[in-house]
Image (cartoon, rainbow, N blue to C red):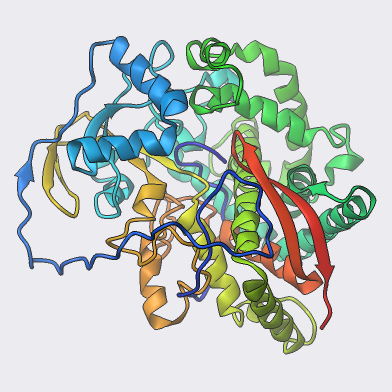
Length: 523
């Protein structure tokens, strides 16, 4: 899961929301011990949002400029990746223009994207216009201001790149809804089986080496789970073997490389992945291996596709993308990030989670069920808070279908038809005018009636948490499925362990988490 609006894959399950208050830490580049909670420097003060009609906002011209062609976009790209870094790039422009709405260039720019110019929306009030498909078009904007070659997806424009106005959008999204509805009974048992293997691996390596990479174990467990749950196929028992995660990572790099920072020397990275697209031919054989596995495993879903007037081939390319790019990509990014934030919260939160989770399971006959998880308000709140503070899909794009008006907290702006809108989600979901202690991980934030009201501002899925994906919108088809997977990880972690220690580094797609200690359940 990375970049623009990655619709994970779906499962229409009803969840009761959770909620508010507790504290943790700011993201640090230091190695972090999970059992020690830290205080953030100075939390941003909360500012009350005025009620509608209370204040008439001034109409302002959108500040900022794009600079000289080629030179301006190239400079912005260097600032974004190297000179300032992503967050500071946006913060400096907010300060320069005294506005959370401004004009700028977004990477990759020359010579991959033809037009890097965007209007940036960096607050929780302006950002939601990106969800309104009556105002914005989503055609070919999944990865932003450029689109990877369709040679990487079998020659097809995949669902993620289609606007809801295109006829195939509804049919392909319906196919994903069918996939998850038809396989929903397999989700919990297959997750438990796959992640039991993960925890056994972590325990063994920690015992032998004193540490274990969560990423490595999570990649294999996540891919095996998705294939078993969705298609009833276990990759290690097929020709694909255990190669799936590495093949996917290479294939995804060819699509997202232009907007990633890999940590290579600056000018090597600039020339290698930011200036010219990588040739799809270099991953053709790898992609074919993935395609063959999915084609052989998804026969019943392909049958349904034909009923929807979708060819078996096109269906298979979409199923591969939904499973490998959207769902697996989401787990690859979000699971380590969530583990990082829970780890940083410290032993007190760990004990409360363990107590709540084990008590709910015991009261449901010792079996983990959907009903049992509904009795875990803290666990549910923690998952939502992780999705709020570090959403797995940080970048969103949309092109104005007509002349529109956009409101920030401070002003009103006019956008012309055809202009590209861009939103950086972490700034919207850490908007201090919406969330108290916005920069902190507050495990209880979404608990209780008041906390549940804040769920409309949790927008990781290309739409509010309080709304559902439909055939006519671009909200993540698998919104509820992703939430369920994330809850299952927290539940399986704390039914086994009282607490855990970790070290956190950086990776191209988020946090690199190393487990250094697992304290077995003592009650």
